[in-house]
Length: 289
Ligand SMILES: [Zn+2]
Image (tube, rainbow, N blue to C red):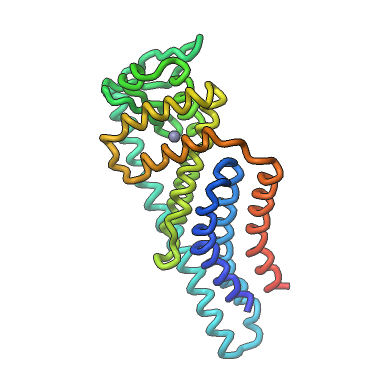
């Protein structure tokens, strides 16, 4: 019955664990470890679902009716998840890249590659849009861009500008877009009744918190917080991306003021990630032993 256990494990990791983990907001103070834990849980859920059919195949030698039912169920879960993963991976990947390419072309036409000075030296690869709303964002990919508006340049003193540029560059360097894309694909691969929006929402926040840390290293917590405020106000009229905007800013401001996580807790978070990842593999190994 290890195949059934794997199906159950997949459902728990995809549906129950994210809801519980999203409540543990104090773990956001260690965003990197928290992101590793979220990745481990989601990967373990996929592994469990994909292992269900192979695990059920292991006892095909004894042909009993009950076992055929289990095999059928396990195969259905494995094939369903595999099919949905491939389909949503293809759809989301294609759509995202096309939208980014379009946006980058637009930015390259509209924006001036204006020299922005960061500290003593000139910062390259920055495009400035002639718009009064203070906004900053990045377009990830091989030909990445950091985009600022004239409004942002006018609103941000140099230390806050350093924070914003460090934040955007942390997104680009860390390929945070791929991480969010991975969770978006997973989110759409999980069948509706088991799906939980918490994972995607939390990962988005953690990625912002991680980039904020780079901003703090480049400037200071105060400059980062002020820059966050300046840009959050600017984004308010454009808040078409939903309720995330203001909620994220408030949570990130709290994180900037929070104490760092004790190392022992961070170690525990990594251990949890490792243990969760080992679980489906151990069950599959037991099935075939
Ligand atoms: Zn960001």
